[in-house]
Length: 437
Ligand code: HSE
Image 1: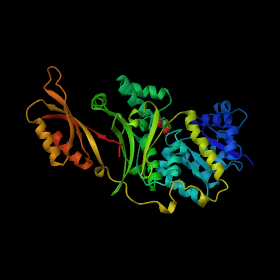
Image 2: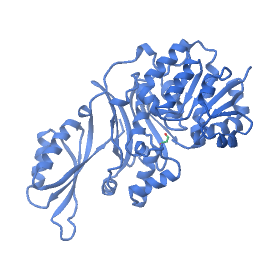
Image 3: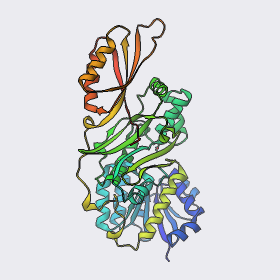
Image 4: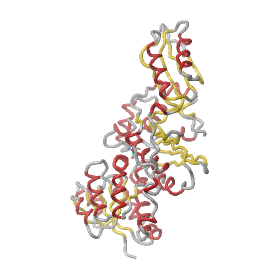
């Protein structure tokens, strides 16, 4: 059968890996796809560097328009990233009848609905395994492997940079800024590390997984996004003393009134497997009503791990080329006219348990005042620890763990606790998840 011609946009870390994997495993890949898949065009601003990677195997151009309009190109692989030129080129490729493979989670999280609509109108595929969890086949699992299930929740460590930072902060007692520099040096962090450390990258990935898991449109803008940049070393230590690890989790949960969609540092019991996922690795827990909990673990970033997902998509597209568009697996797993309009819940409606740290005067009646405020909001305390005062200090740290409650109730309680004259500064609030049901 005629080989499939692939045009690549952007030959950076992942693009270079994709070229290498396609070449190295070409024989196995064509045995799987039923035909050869070869990269015949590459567009990159740095033409000399691109040529040094691909040699004579592919035509190199500085103008990506040459690739997305070229009549010989069957599949365009977009690895430019971002929402600017990448969106324009992807839509142009679709308009020209090209199938698209992308790792661009930011673009899909913000403009996925528009891109899928355009692709449907042209009858072309858009595959994006590499957009979430690097080399972990989580999109395939959610979209196909778990298709019998009603997905109840998804909880994932889906940003390797922040997980690396948290691991190093806990393991070495290292400072946040130093570990971030190390992560950037190792090539894990996004070009703008704000996206990694402030939870934005994780929220992009979460919005995509939630759409596929629940059959809802991609709704990044409705997600609660909170990162790790304000996390204090002290809280990592106190959480450890109580038997918890702090991880940046992306959580999507089905509730009666709607869906929870949130990214924030989360205390997880250290006995949970996912609490022990360290460094740049990613892991995603999915709870389905039939299968129960399943966990997917692997490298969430890096050249060949991410290329593994890109090439898998190329094979998938190659196999489905002769399939009628209406009979292909839908972009978001559910048939496009069957997406649900059940809302994403506002953060105030979210139900979870909490870790609170407060600094109080070491005097009679303080605990009574605090526990009364919590009782008034019907918030039940699971554990309470008062730290020994440091020599010469009149104030102590109190750590409180609550049972399940609603975010809006804890907001009121925190406001009232902070207003007490015996409480100094702000209350530190972190959310907890047991992940066992
Ligand atoms: N910057 C991302 C991370 C990798 O740290 O996980 C690609 O998604």
